[in-house]
Amino acid sequence: SKLGSPDTSASKKMEIIPTSSLLSFRRRLIISGFLFEPVSLPCGHTFCKKCLERDRAPEPRCVLCKEAGGAAAGQLLRVNVILSNLLTKWFPCQVKASQLRHEGNLLYKEKKLQAALQKYNEAVSLAPNDHLLYSNRSQINSTLKACEDALHDAETACRLQPYWLKGHLRKGQALANLGKTEEALREFLFCLALDTGNKTAKSEAQKVSFLSHLDLHSGIVLAWLCSTAFFFFLLIDIVDIRENSTGQHIPFEVVDPSDLDCSLCMRLFYEPVTTPCGHTFCLKCLERCLDHNPKCPLCKEGLSECLAMRKYCKTVLMEELIARYLPEELTERRKIYEEEIAELSNLNKNVPIFVCTMAYPTVPCPLHIFEPCYRLMIRRCMETGTRQFGMCISDPVKGFADYGCILEIRNVEFFADGRSVVDSIGKRRFKVIQHSQRDGYNTADIEYIEDQKVQGQEYAALLVLHDSVYDQAYTWFNSLKQALKSRILSHFGPMPAKDPDPQANPNGPAWCWWVLAVLPLENRAQLPFLAMQSLRERLSGIRRVLSFMARARAR
Image (cartoon, rainbow, N blue to C red):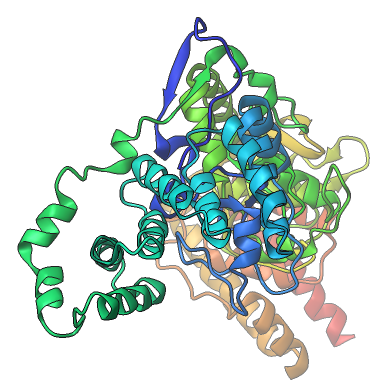
């Protein structure tokens, strides 16, 4: 199909639009006419509002990608505001012609045939290359018994779209009304070759075959229909419509980059997504807004369902338009985005910091995320692929402590209201070099810390201390009441086994961190253990705590 030509002088610099760009909706929409009142589905594909309303289904699916989420019965369809404005600006004649076509259709349904014909005459004068207008006007003329006019319009539609079934169907009907049954039959058989399951074409073919004394099922017609010669006749000179369509013309002068700016970041759309209410935003901009409020940033319509699905598909046509007509601007926009992602991926500078609780290497740390700033932080950790962030306890002066632990996200479970539960586990310890903030959450420049290894007699003494404290911790844990032990096991898992070489891991034995996590100590008392770079000192500290608890229990 054609989008139409905007009102411009021939002297302006023009760019040919391939059908695949502006009518990206593949062959079905290529032959369906100008995109009028565009509605973008959740899958990212865009269709005419009237087409979606006509094809409503109990369990709707997109006709292109077969994804669930078409136009359900009773669903209110909203026009894509940005695309609608662009089409009106670029193709004013086509938009007006489409409006007249819909008005003519309503008049035709009301049996006001002359008024409907007048609307179509006006539409054709505005869009003389729109095959759909000629096809529909052919139907009106047939109803008015103006058979020659009906045939002329049908032939024009076929000339504009040679392999459009409906055009040949209209031509066949007009020929049949004029008594040219054999020519009509050929048109209907042509339709059946294009779509063997078309009931209307099959019915019309049966009617004219009876009138022309030909048995459609006798084998003569069917043999011709199925013959190699017929298909050669049908397919000869057929080439890829998308590659060879003459398309329409858009002057570069009317393509204004500001028409494709996101209203939230005021930059060119990057990964544009369209909400059910018809507004379009950059994907990242929309996600950040929904962190704070599950409503459209522009019209304030609720987007709870959109948030619950957590599936934002890019608006395909918008991406194609930007890529084709604003390539330099898109390259610059992509460069900015990639620089931001690279900065967010750095695990030494501006590392995101979650200020909450103590975390330790190798120890699980489940988190309930509900604050908008941390929703953004966790999402960025996932998007960059690092899946890591720092955990620190709060500090009344600096905001957060000078030491913390890097957590790695193992899984995220999202809820319909935007909250999430993050399953994370401790990886490495760090020291904060500089405290800072970014987009509402804390960040830090950090350096990683490791235990200092010892050798010789010091290592032999360390092994003895290691085994002794492990046995002491194991005895303490087994002395706890069963209910308390069960809670600890469900939250932290079982106590790790003793390490053959306590210095094998730069952070020391896993069981040490497990014991520190389950010991009933305040965060401030636990923090020095995290900062220690001597395993001997850490083991000695754990032994003192266990001994104190044993004495207190004995009293």
